[in-house]
Amino acid sequence: MQKKVFYFFAQKSRLAVLSFLVIFSAFGQDLEPRVYANVPKNLNVVAVGYAYMDGNVLTEPSLPITDFTIQSHSLAANYIRTFGISNRLARVQVSLPYTFMDGSQTRTNGDILTGSRTGFADMKIRLGINLLGSPALDKKEFKYYEQKTILGVSLVTSVPTGKYYDDKKVNIGTNRWGFKPEIGISKRFSRVFAEIYTGIWFYTDNNDYLNKKLEQKPTYSLQVHASYYFKNNMWLGFNTNWFFGGRTITDGISDDSEIDNWRVGGTFSTPIAKGQSLRLQYHVGAYTNNGLNYYAITAAYQYSFF
Image (spheres, rainbow, N blue to C red):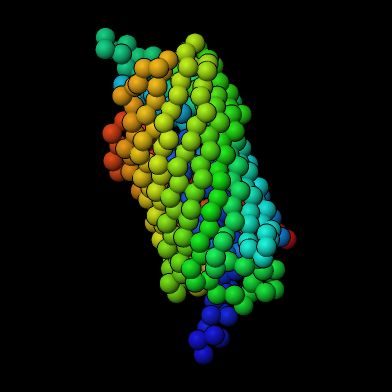
C-alpha cells in the first residue's frame, strides 16, 4: 500500500518538483530552494522573471552610504540543463539579469541627491552534481524513484558582464569575478523537503574602483529551506540565509565593511499547465549590521521540457 501511495505522489508531483530550479539572487545574497532536488536527466528549463528590490541594495559592501535607498527592477532570462556524469545527476544553470535602478541619498544639509543606472547585471553560472542519493534517471525511471537524502556540490561563478562606471560608487555590475564552491544536503520527509547549503564566495580584485584597487575577503554563506508539497502540485517554502565576512580593502586600507546579515522569506510555486509553472518569492532582512537592508519580491514563469 505504501508503494502505491508513493507512486501516486510521484506521478502527480513530478512536474511540480521540476520547479525547483529558477529564482533570482540579489547581489549574491541567494535564497534558492530546491537547488539539489532530484529530477530526471536530459531536462531543459527556460524561465523569465521579474524582481523588485527596495532599500539599501548595493553591489559593493564597501559602502554602505548613509541615508541611501535604491528601488531596483530586474528582468532575467534563465536556462537549465540536467545530464548524467558517472550515473550521477548533474546540472548547469545560466542566469542573466537586466536591471533598472533608481536611488536617492539625503545629505546632512537636507538636500536629496538622485541618480539612476540601467543595464545588464553580472551573469551567474552554476555547475553542480549530486554525489549521493540522486542517480541520473530518464523520465520513465524517475517516476518510480523516491528521494531520501541527497548530498550535492556545486560551483557558482559570477561573471563581470554588468554595466560598470569606474568613477561611480553605485553600479549594477561589480567589475570582478566571484566564485562560490558550495555543498548542499536535501532530505525528504513525506511531503516536506528540508535543505541546507553552505558555501564561500571568493572574489578577484576590482582594479578600477574610483581609481583605486578594491579587494574583498571571502564571504561565508548558509541557507536553510523547508518546502511542503500539496497533492495539487503546488508547494510552499520557508527560506532563510546568513552571510558573514566580506571585509573590503581599498588601496591597502581595511574598511569597516564586514557583513553580518540574516534574511528570511517564503516561496510559493504552482503549476499552470503541463511543464509550466509560476513562482513567487518574498524575502526581507531580519538582521543586518552593515547595509544591504532591503526587501525583495520576485516572480518567475518557467517552462520545462525534454
